[in-house]
Image 1 (cartoon, helix red, strand yellow):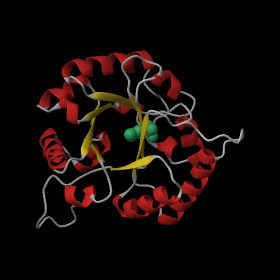
Image 2 (image 1 turned 90 degrees about the horizontal axis):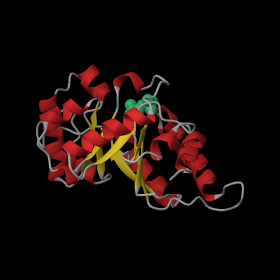
Image 3 (image 1 turned 180 degrees about the horizontal axis):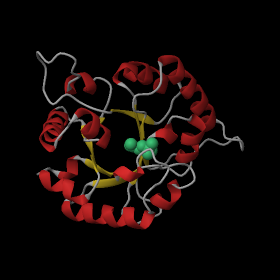
Image 4 (image 1 turned 90 degrees about the vertical axis):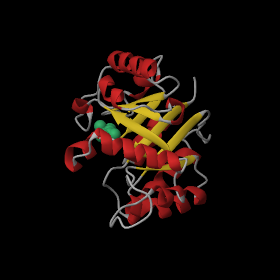
Length: 231
Ligand code: PGA
């Protein structure tokens, strides 16, 4: 299997206490499976995207439990440093994380983010060598960007599938991934939308899907560890 990405999007969930519990549990699952053998997470990139306020705690917990996890954020300021009250910019993020989700449909819906805003966020991410994970809900959304596709990851997330328990079919998701790759040469393409431990393999077994972006199923450590068992 080629290198696969497993991205956990925690959205606006988890307190510090809940985060500590999640790490205790997932560490147990990963370091001591029932057979007594460690999980083989070979050739996969696992990225956890918590709220900004949890980044520092996650960095410590990942080191403490020796987990092969990288960090990402769920958003980024469209501006650099300066007088932008409330914003978290790419320099702040770079202290903790290597990836940033941009253009998630929940940000487009609840915060009115348009393509221009998303584009600015991508530019800011790239300025500080963060890898943007650009979420699109259809192939045409990519037409708005002229990007160096080798520096970004694209996540195909059909809106009907997000948080609904009703994922796209692996066949259709693979077809879209294939078309996205034709438009954005070299970019890795992930699928997101109601991915869980039951269906993850069907997406990973396709020819053009390079990984998964997991929302609600990543909140439960047992469920997420089971998803990672396909890494
Ligand atoms: P879901 O969310 O897995 O809960 O559907 C995915 C996402 O919004 O990234």
